[in-house]
Amino acid sequence: MANTIAVGALLTAGLRPEFMNVYRTTYKGVFDRLKDIVAMDLTSDKIQEIYGFLNAAPYPARWDRGTNISSSNMGSVQFTVPNYDWGHRIYIHDNDLQDDQTGSAYPMARQLGEHFATLVERIFFQVMQSTTDPNLLPVIPVAADGLGLYSGSARFGVATGNQFTASGTSSVAQVQADIYTIIQTYVNFQDTQSQPLFDPSTIRENGFKLIHGPALTLVMEQAEKAMIIPIGLNTATSNAGVSSVLLASGRGPNIQWENNQRITGSSYYSWLKGLPIEKRGFLRQIRQGFFESLGNWEVSDHTRDTGEIYLQYKTREGYGIAVPYNTIKVI
Image 1 (cartoon, rainbow, N blue to C red):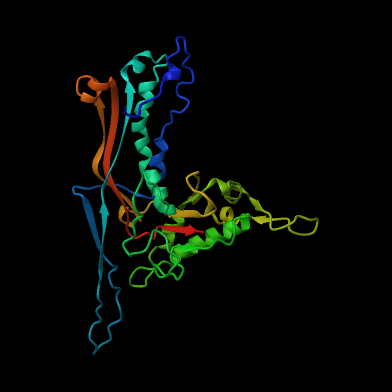
Image 2: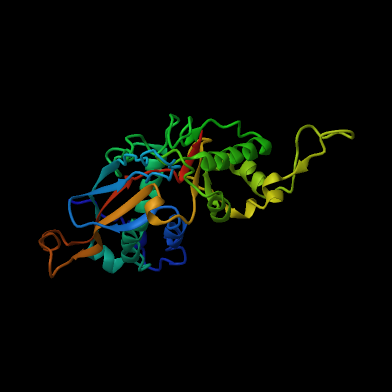
């Protein structure tokens, strides 16, 4: 017997349906949260995709009379992103479907399809935190440079790479100082010719998304919204507080703060917003789009053998890391 929806609690005659949707959720916001920082829905037409790109082109150099013009090498890089099948099936006995007093069993079963909208977010957070999940990616992919999504080793021309240790998370002053370290790190990033990777105006005007977990809710909201920041014990003569540098500088409105329970612990993550697709470090490719299959009396031997109908959903897609200079981790 297959795993089925247990609807015994819904079969009592006269059962009231007001709370039938208590666990039915919507996920419209998932794509809205990620579409500006992830390379979404790249197309795929094979079992895996191989991506390649050239390193930065050389920059001009002075050419003195009587000397040969200078020249430079240009390297290239490739990385591979495999596709995986993602699917699930859910069964319900036809008798239970007919006797369900709330009429909610079938709509709730179809919520399995709605949950596919969370797949990209779940994998995004799996890769971002490098966690093991038997239902998601079997291994965490490496980036095109052979490192992980984050590395504290030399990377992009910065000795600490795109990861650094926090000053602390117990005070607003510490969080704001580390936000400025994030900004400083983006400004210091270099291309493969040791030239600035970003125009500073891109960082200021586009801003970035700052994703943290519930453990940092208070200090992050204070850092985001407080006009005056305490600097110590308030007395009649000292430590009255200072103005929030994020708000005073005008950077505050261009930082998008996200509190997400999928992040555990006190690490938090910055993602530059609004970059072109090829400059976003995390990518999703679609080999076969999401679709629904129905097993019933007309089409399914399983239904005719057991009386159970089923809903099945499937998609085929892959996830990978290109060159992740658009994201920084604070640990």
